[in-house]
Image (cartoon, rainbow, N blue to C red; front, side, top):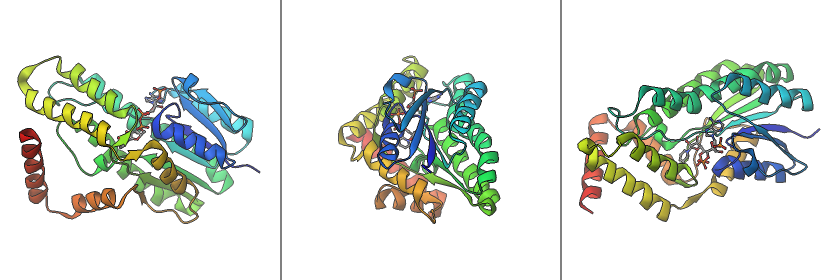
Length: 275
Ligand SMILES: NC(=O)c1ccc[n+]([C@@H]2O[C@H](COP(=O)([O-])OP(=O)(O)OC[C@H]3O[C@@H](n4cnc5c(N)ncnc54)[C@H](OP(=O)(O)O)[C@@H]3O)[C@@H](O)[C@H]2O)c1
């Protein structure tokens, strides 16, 4: 019997590349996104319209998979974006939407697959967070908060469901070439409306995002390989990283006293402003 995986954010970036990789490895993939025309359809890939912020849409996504296949082996929560901007400027409605997508979407879909996974006595939930779930930079407050929440939630869930042979794990990418960067940049400009109050930080972060887009070493294909391992490893890790540098960054962030972290951060910001 072929294994079945549900992937959110399958129309772009890591979700799209993971969709192709899992299908190439003989999994039946249900790829969900709002723009389904961007999801390739092959004999192993089914595209379904999905808005993870909409309960009816989430129910339809999971019910369709279970009624068509009778089982679901893995759920990959990749849908997400960065609602970037100064806390003072981001409307609370936009902050709620950030959590609705990056956190509650994953939570609701997971609740929908768990009864079936318990019945089968196996399952894997793979949550795409970010190194930004542990480190933070200016203008990313709601994005970092949503990813930190996803990580704590995933670890707690893992404690609860491991006894049913279900695991919940986290992938923490760093800057990766996809539409994430351009969308985040657009959000900064939208949220600040040209307000000069935070111009230095806006310039700093929009330049950093543009530089990252030019010099980024990771590709969505690289990350698809990591997500594939997180989904298929017999004995999965709690955290997956693309590079040793990403792993080290998170290790340092979690172990270094806050006073040193802030000093390093201030000096990085100062150096970037001067360059
Ligand atoms: N790229 C990076 O530098 C980076 C770094 C660390 C972590 N991440 C995280 O990695 C994940 C994947 O990002 P990516 O780089 O692949 O970004 P991407 O290329 O922009 O893809 C984002 C995907 O999320 C989907 N999506 C957004 N809102 C949705 C909604 N309400 N309902 C359903 N789907 C929705 C989009 O599809 P539609 O618009 O068609 O719905 C798209 O398929 C995200 O969670 C992101 O936060 C990215």
